[in-house]
Amino acid sequence: MGRGRFHLKTLGQERSLSAFRVQAGAGAAGPDPPRGRVHLLGNGADSVSLTDYCAAALLLLLPATMFHLLLAARSGPARLLGPPASLPGLEALWSPRALLLWLAWLGLQAALYLLPARKVAEGQELKDKSRLRYPINGNPIYDFFLGRELNPRICFFDFKYFCELRPGLIGWVLINLALLMKEAELQGSPSLAMWLVNGFQLLYVGDALWHEEAILTTMDITHDGFGFMLAFGDIAWVPFTYSLQAQFLLHHPQPLGLPMASVICLINAIGYYIFRGANSQKNTFRKNPSDPRVAGLETISTATGRKLLVSGWWGMVRHPNYLGDLIMALAWSLPCGVSHLLPYFYLLYFTALLVHREARDERQCLQKYGLAWQEYCRRVPYRIMPYIY
Image (cartoon, rainbow, N blue to C red; front, side, top):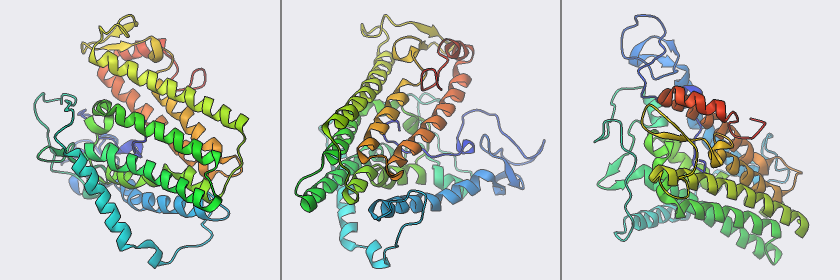
């Protein structure tokens, strides 16, 4: 995420490299459960944990939520928390032509991904310094949801890296564009609100693709397995729920004057300025701390040999890129007015996601950097929002 990446985990669904485990009883036999998993029935690999139930529930709940949002956006009441006005027939949910178009879209993106004329960048060094490790034991439901393999590949085709940006994010922009053209067909021309939503989200996706190499340092690539969560999120959740504002505007046109549109553009510009400035500063410092753009920034040395930025954007709050992301999310929803909660689903969901991700980042950084991270938190007390959180 940021940047639209999908992360929906309960606190117990995190994979950790630490040896610490929570067991049902002292001296229990069998392999330890993943960190934070509380066994409900039995011990060892055959036991059932709370996170297993959560993973199984999310396998059903996530697709159902996506369909609910799509149906609500095109219904008359457009209720986020209520049932849709009507359910489509089974024939409306299946289209061989749509399936062929989807497969052709994936094939086109795969072909572009495999083109030889492209820049090749190295990812983060793994813990063992040389090769990936693939655990073979675990709970099948939990493992299916989160994924056991870190970077599944066929030759040099990396499935997780491919799905992170290409089919979902570009598909999101194409869906927005199709909705804009449909509105022009129905009303004679696209509304100002539709233009703003398309423009803001096109800028966001274009930024992600322009800075594609930066994704190699994200948690998605370096730590998370490629399972249902990332696959469904990248291919389905992102294009169909992140385009919710444009879908809402097609079925519920909203008047928008130039003064209010100017204010919304300013809000989006501020969010993007913070988001891009913070990420660029971080990436430049990681690549070359001696770069003139970051050489004068104050840092804290750590026991690992790395340094923590404690000035610039990263001296304002501990996650300034998340702050920029949330400000932009607000700007994407404002063109839809304030009469319905549905267009603000993305802002609410993304706030919960980033707060959870921030908490996970904090725990991992404390484990990795120890006293240096405690000093950083003392000097930069606010996590995402200055003087608020």
